[in-house]
Length: 89
Image (cartoon, rainbow, N blue to C red; front, side, top):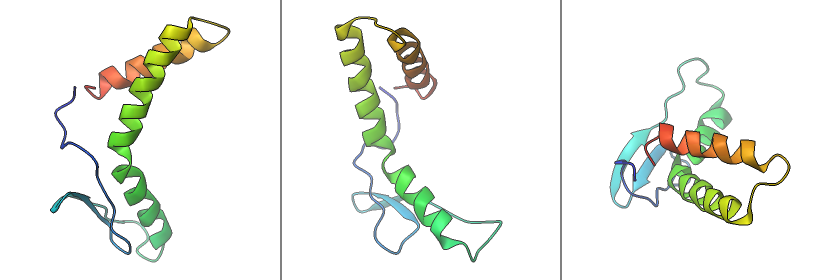
């Protein structure tokens, strides 16, 4: 498994911080358009969901492999496993 800060991570409301328990582990900063806070808010929520997304992708790979290789599944499974490998999961 990867050596990132264990989840769950959270994104407190009205904050660009990503937290793991009581610790801030990341801060989203908008460099190009400080007036477009929606993009920064969306980025913060996506980052906060990363550990859960990795866990679900790993589970999906297990279930796809168990179900067998049907039309299109083989390629999807290969790509998903490559992504998990790339991030060290």
